[in-house]
Each structure stands twice: as structure tokens, then as C-alpha cells.
Length: 399
Image (cartoon, one colour):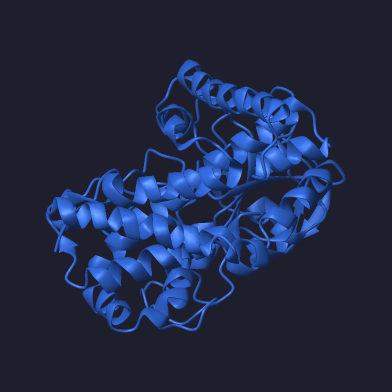
């Protein structure tokens, strides 16, 4: 019963010797106590869940809530203690029916069919930046020369954000997503991004556009404040996750040269490679957060209404119950139902765009640069455990 459950003091985040593996304590918890009590940074005694089956079921459980006023961060963040009213349009921190109102409109924009229409433009972006990087010659920083501009262009084009505003939102994202930012810096970062989107929404009311923001403005279903928040959420999520997946994913492939060689020899492995890298790396290493919306029983434990729950996607995706030898990167593996995009009604709305973007990026890299390799020893590559989204700051490569 829950009275004998182990209590963990904060979410384990410190990685071991391998930069691609989650904190080793998570594997121990998953094996011995997949549903454990955890003390959150604010002193609240909630829960930490690490097993794949348990995480998946809780993400789909209607008794679990995503309401912003109930959620608690499992890691000490500068804005974590600011438990104020959720901003209008913050659909990721809502339950139905409020969440449904926003999700319904966004799902159509991120459908697999609509996403496929973006492929020619994404291919063009990827090839152009590869051209520029190759022409400049190695060594090069793959993040700055390739991952960052490709990620920015993709989400900016979809939303209708001028790419020349990239410096503004990148600066805001860094302040918002860095664990060591002060509360003032994080708030300023969010306000900077929100201000940019608010200006764009007003501009699109004057001059309608056929991009996502422009279409939502024309529909008239949401207020300007709601649209600015929706745009901010999509911009931040779409940019930072893709940038880090391209950078960290390439690092992982280069550190497993047989895997990179297989992709270079058979670009048809691109789809498999993306799914395996998403599972193996799980860059949202702080996981998902929920709260018990009501008293409920779960796997022999009693969750009380209001209990905070931290769901470790990284631990769940390395669960031996999910696949054989889960700590091995194998891009020939038949894709498994990983949780890198979450699960249930809050599953990442932009996952089809992300998959397409990553497939094009990895396939093009391996095809055009089959001899790509690190330009520095692997232990000199700076990873970013201090960020909410895990990745690499730079990736020095040559070919």
C-alpha cells in the first residue's frame, strides 16, 4: 500500500557517464517502485511514476488533471512558485471542455495530410542550409549552422512568424527554459515572446494571411490575448524540441557509427531512425506533470485529489517491458509505442510536423555527408541538463 512506498527527494536529473541515458536512479525506481512518492521542490508530497505501462495509463486517465492551478513542477524552476491564474489560451494547462475548444482547431492544422503538403518547403530549407554548411567547410557547429535555423524556419513558416524575429524568441526561450534563470529573467523571456506574438496577431487582423495564426485570426473564435498565448506555446515547443532533437540525435548517431552508416546506406530507414531516436533520447527529460483531479486508486495506491504527479517519459521509454534491450540504440528496430510525445488528450499536437522535419533532416545529413564525424572528443560536447528540453549547446563536426 502507499504507506510503504519509497519517498524520493526531488526528480532525479543528474545523468551518468553516458550523455544519452536518463539519470540512473530512474531505472532503479522503475524496477523496484514504478509508482513512488516524491517530495516536490515546494515541499509538496506527490508521486513519481517511471514504468511505461503506468505512465501511459495515467496520461490517459480522465481522473488526472492538467489544470495549471493544480500543477507543480518536479524540478526547481524560476516561475514554478508562481501559481497564478492560467493565461487565456494556455491550452496545455487546461482540462476539457476548455482544452477541447483549442485542441479541436489546432488538430486540423497539424494533421498528417496537411503536414505532408509542407514537405517540399522543408526539403528546400534543409538542403539550403546543408549547402551553406558544406560550402563554408568543416569543422562546423551543426547546431548553429543547421539544427537551429531549420527548426526556426519550419515553425515560423507554419505559424506565420517572420524569421527575422528569430533572435527575439530564441532569447526569450533560453531565459524561460533555463533552470538557473531568475524568476525575473524567465518572466521577461515569456513576456518578450508574448509581445512578439501579440504584435503579429494585431498585424494579421489588419492584413489577413493564410498561415496558422492568420487563419485563426480570421476565424474569430479566439480573442487576441488567447491567440498570442496559443502562438507562443506552439512557437516555443516547435522550435526548441526540433532544434534539440536534430542536435542530440546527430550526436547519438555519430557516437554509434554503425547506426549512422546504416542510415547513410539506406535512407529508407529514416522513419525508423526518427522513432528510435525519439524513444532512446526522450529530450523532455523533466517528463510530463499532472495532478489527481479526484481521489482515485491506482496500482494499489491511493491518490488524493490535488496530489501532484510527475510522469517520467524518459524512464518509461527505456522500460524493458516496452522493447528488448531498451538501452541500445537500434534504428532498424520495429517502432514501438514510445511516449516521447506524451499520450492521451494532451499528446503533442505538432508530432506529425516534428516527425517529418526530423526525417528530412536526418536522411539528408546521412545522404549528403556519409563521412560526418565529431570534430572534438565526445566528452567535450556540451550537453544541456540545465534546460527543460535536453540537448547539446553546440555540436562541432567535420566530414
